[in-house]
Length: 172
Image: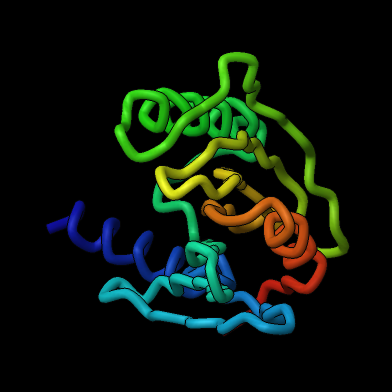
């Protein structure tokens, strides 16, 4: 009984004084020509996707949501690296895309007003012959970590990286 009371007290304190943005709510301005979708998952976490559909092109999509695991921001670079390397190998083995022999994964830092983090990406050619960029990103405001990816044209990848400038964490 003593443990139950202690557990209840700890849970109540965490609930009252925990992370102000526990569901990873973001304000995002969608770029011109794109559509923003904010889907709230069963666990209350927001899953954001921004999609572009252009004539004679495969759709391009940028996605981001709260990272599901407790993790230090210092682990973000190595986590992005692991995910992108696995993605790179998966795309290399798939029948749907071609990665050039000299293709390399590019790594960059993201540093904006409210968020900072890492992005890693590589280029490949789809089965239809379209040049594509595949990326993985992870950013934080110091309290919440968000992760996601982009898949689409090189031109829209540049536009998608500008989305981080518009992101602002919200307190529900």
